[in-house]
Image (cartoon, rainbow, N blue to C red):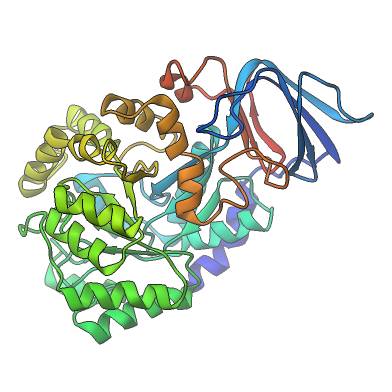
Length: 432
């Protein structure tokens, strides 16, 4: 953490300075989806003062005298998108990720985190939830963004992800034993008191949300599979301690045994959720928890394997191939049953800046374009606890606005080519 604190000014110097905000900005929209889930408006005008929406008017109007006018009258305008599951500090996968974790300095990680955040913003994602970063680079970036010193997505950060020893978050897996002492393992817990302590260690760092794992992971270098790897009392201790500090808890889980244990304990979201069963559906609905499918992981796997068939060691490759074969099947059960869906990509496993690829997969596996957009706006804002700030375009909320050339309600893939991005009233991208 000390290294990151010393390095933060260099990260700031790398970022482009924020544009000075005009007192009043007027955005003229050809069509406007201000509240996803409701029908879009026709030509509309958004009045922005000091980075926030003051009012939305019907028709294309000039606004007050002296206002800056942004003409998007030939565009479809909607709220800035939200990705509920990213890893901004990570780019690599398979053996390359293992090597990166050993050789990358905290300074390099900070630059990589900033670069990936800016790619994400250019793709139209004005808010992200970062679910796992051991160095503190993302926590530091979160604070610089919140202070208005760096133009990047709003960040809700989980700090280090927590699992049991030999679980998905154990950084010593596949490393020689002589290297274990060099790996910070404050994020591992075994037993109730240990799990309470692990949560409190992340609370002390100032995290916004807690991330835990109840099952193995596709990328875990251990032959223990993708089933449950934690006892009921440990899960309860983790969830209860997070909630004691008013923090939501996101749970990495693939196997239904780990999914159901987490939901029964009161988890706020399930990440991946690859093997949902009927009991899972009941528990989701009873708890009001969100499902974050992260279907885009398969794109990352397929692209790495195409470039290098030996990108993953054999025990990981078998899980990768399984994940590819079953992707989307749980969503096909959950969405028609009324489970709440929040958009998340696991970017870092998939490519940063390609977050919108997830929309196509959500629609492929049963969601309507409008429902997919809701998942990436109002639903994700609710999950992240930022509904008062973003997720829809309404008076009083931050002016997080994007625009595309086509109609995403007819063809959701147009969201892969965002032409205009505004974050908090500051224009980040404007391609006419």
